[in-house]
Image (cartoon, rainbow, N blue to C red):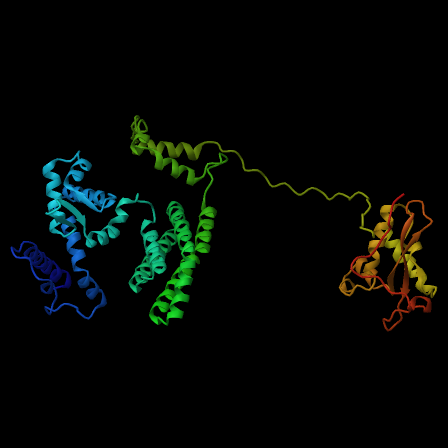
Length: 473
């Protein structure tokens, strides 16, 4: 017998066993559900559930029965817990629940008394709220909040942060939050692997909301780690750090979403020159209420088949072979070569001012001149040309520009160095009336600047920016 046949035979037996548990006249013991007949008493979760047995019984009393009756009990219970009085006479309850039938109210109050959620004082004829009811209302409070997206993660984060502030944080709460983060990571990873644009965008919206919630809880997580270190609680510290790693793993998915959406954008197709993309078409189709209506009238004219006999096919083929066909075009020779017209080749030349400065510096070097005043090298022409020449002077001796090819490199390799002075004065020029003083100093074969004695004691200005012509007339 194969495994599938064995499972097919075993399934009815398992269903029958389950029905025997459900239909038993006597409620089975909890130990009867285990193989060895012994409960897992060494498990921490089992011990916690056993300790909270009265709370479980109270919830069972509220939620047992038809759905309408369960909602009625919850409504009455939450209304009772919201009343500001500590003692509730029956007249107060009758006035508060005046819209409820008397027998329905009595039925619910009887169930709450049996579940020890209400205590009846016969001498004073009034009800009081028990501590068990106050504990139960904390568990049922999420039922009174409007169901929003990511409410599960928000509730877990709120429980962890609130329990830490109150000093009642339990490791099980960190376990539940870490498991929820792992489930969210798998959900987002599946959305990225799907490659669906709409699935990606829906998952991206939920990812951003979850990311905002997790970032707000980062301060609480850091405080939990610090408190655990101060108290010496190694287990709580380890769980908090594992929760931080899960949070960081979730935060790292932002780049994966961006890459997946960029890949989808590259695969989007634009329909002709209309600007409409395949995404627009799909979004429009999703908003059409009845897609089958789009095909109305498309098949109003049926397809008419054409019947052709064999001899008709032969006649058509013979006529096709015998008809006159146009002659194929004869190849034509290439045209004869033409003499190219005479012209001039335009070659890029050096800028006029740069070439003139290099010529002047070369002339001074060939004449063996010493230190020269800056005025002949800078002034002349117009203010803009003088400013341009002043900006060329820092290229002299520039170690980075000396390795370049062309006019800039030639300028940097000139055996001259510029030295500006802190002094300024008037100059005789048509366009510039005032400028900084300075000299052009020659360089010897060893690369040393030959400084004349009258300039040796003069301090050089800061080399941050070369001064230029001060004003234009």
